Length: 115
Length: 113
Image 1 (cartoon, each protein chain N blue to C red):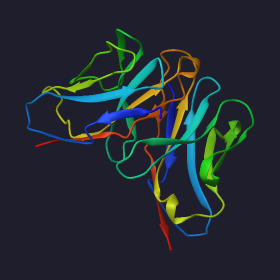
Image 2: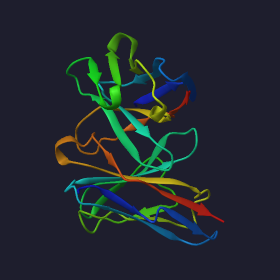
Image 3: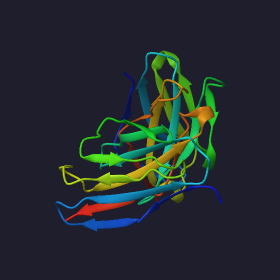
Image 4: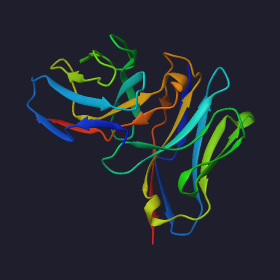
């Protein structure tokens, strides 16, 4: 069974500082990995995805993530935090594109950006 | 504009009442999903459907029911058997070509009094 662990339920960063959100996964096969962002009382928006192409994936809003198979990690980074980055971030894993497949989500990391 | 709509955004019900949450998509996606979100627990899958007139239980289906009579619609009923129904409910859909890429609606916050 696949699983996702996000280290740190809350992260506080200063505006302009590096944002680093950690995600580790387990999967019996090469995974598909996703990062989603959720603003208060809204649905999830896809930030970026890894689908077995380049290991460094660039997403929207200046975010990027690197797939490291040896570490089973898919950490999300942004070089310089902006106030608008304050939200909750979810890492998710899927082990197949096939019908009947499901996404498994981590518990989420809430980001607070200090001015 | 294509997208997923969920209504209502906020819903209040008395304990013991069944309630139905609406989810409609005009993305022509084959698969649709219902998730429940509780603080600190991420998203948990309730039910999913890959095609019309067919659906499968997810990880926490007890106390919920669904139907898929139309491709565009996947309503969720929270029954009185659900012990802790107060939560944020998210609907999602994905295309046949890539079921793993899910697009989410804005959610419905259900509060049972």
